[in-house]
Image (cartoon, rainbow, N blue to C red; front, side, top):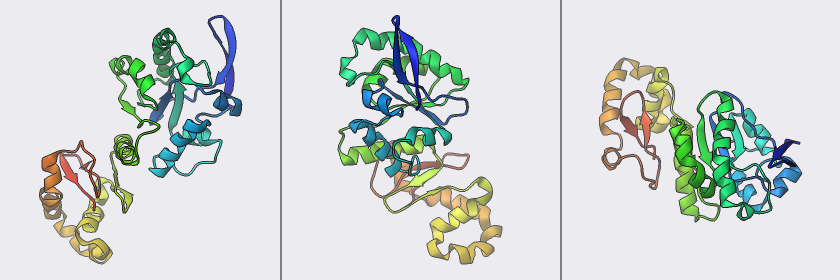
Length: 252
């Protein structure tokens, strides 16, 4: 059970133990723990919370996780969990504005215990509204999950952007998801883009011409998307940074 007793305003309360440590890729920050989650001893176990886990798994930000123990398994994979306000309630609407304002500096202090600056992903707009400015001033990169009841297209777009922000080396689209190889293996990636199923047969032949192939890829891949920029969602794939320069590619 990932719970602990803390003292708030002179009262001892049972709440979720925050999952924080050095070396995390990102920390998901909610508004406050739901009573249901505290009773079960794990983050996001209520009706809306279950939607959070489904989105992360559907969009491959985390692998398939054991139901009811998702936070512990995600923590092992580099994702932390915290809340703006630590007092649990049935609904976040029960929190006072003054309570949320007062919690911002405490949240910043708790996050600083990791000793580094992982990305902060706000699960709900309410938490972002109160804490974003101070965390950005402290040097954190701030991201946000889509609203719980957002439409499917908006959710897919926002989750795709979040996935690329957390791992910019991942190309994702409606037909496939794979990771761009390291610089030493770029020629296999370029072959895959240029020749598809023929890439394995050709891989032994193209290494001498790799520099020219890389130049061609930089110049020819997805020129329309490069002109449009990389900030918008669109059908068919994802615009991503590639290599050490300003090259961009789109996988269809």
